[in-house]
Length: 350
Image (cartoon, rainbow, N blue to C red; front, top):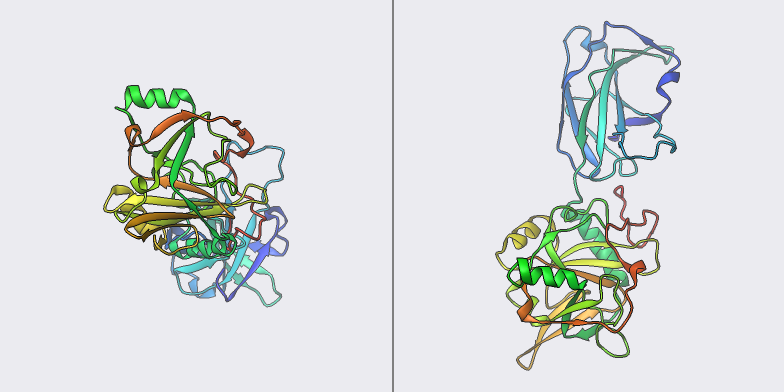
């Protein structure tokens, strides 16, 4: 909470030394504004009667109960924020306390501190609900800078590829006129990522084997692979954005990048929410020109997941069966990020 406040956590049923007196005004018409991933402003109305006796506000802030949560887990201890009575709206902030994209409930009391240290309090206000925001560009830039540290040297590559089951490609041919369609990104990666559940795109890989310079023959996503020349997706007519950096309790890390044709709906979405990268000069994925030919490099020490935001026609590349294994354990579908990893977490919730 803001700097002139103290943080107190106590069980609501054990509020010893607090007497209830109805003379203090009860907050009503609570308004939440300026919501970020780790802060918000709160204001309310109250009767002018006894208003001058108010010395503190008690704010009871809790994560909203998830209907699907494990009933045997310990519930969060109800957490009360005790703040000096400052002019409203008041800012509530604390990166260790608020998580991004999370639903909370909040209620307020007014309080008057007595000479003996006890408080006289009003009744609780009504309970209202709100949801914290996604990571902002500022937070994503912090993630980007952490990812740059471990990206490693750049390796040359020439194709993007996408593995799926044979049925997927059959469906694309029969129902979508041979064009793979963008779909909404799942909830894998950072909990505060602004692209999860919102950005539409098609996932591609570009990683190469160190010894061959070609895509690996194994894949967690299916035995059939669509390969397309890199310049068909990534060129001077596309923009490149940083989307996320995460791991799944593993030693290796993933970086999500977004390629969007200039001026496309995907480009407009990313421009507002994601840090844009220089396509010719960044630590993850580059497109440069050498002797009139486009040359491509990818980072060696992170696994790149590239989202392309427009439909892609199968006729632009080839579909063939891979000779390797389908390694399901490497799938990142709806994978949860390791919240304890110091390499890929920033100091704003999860």
